[in-house]
Length: 53
Image 1 (cartoon, rainbow, N blue to C red):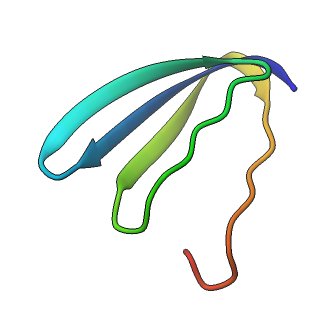
Image 2 (cartoon, rainbow, N blue to C red):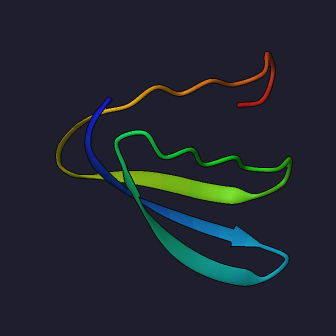
């Protein structure tokens, strides 16, 4: 993977921002609201369970 991604997430009413670098892992729990915004150009791998969208 390559680049950085700014992950914004809200769980249980708490909002947080996490800067992810290549090799980092972010795991969202069911019900977590989240959005990923690349910082410049980024290549990422997203793995989702069937029906999670």
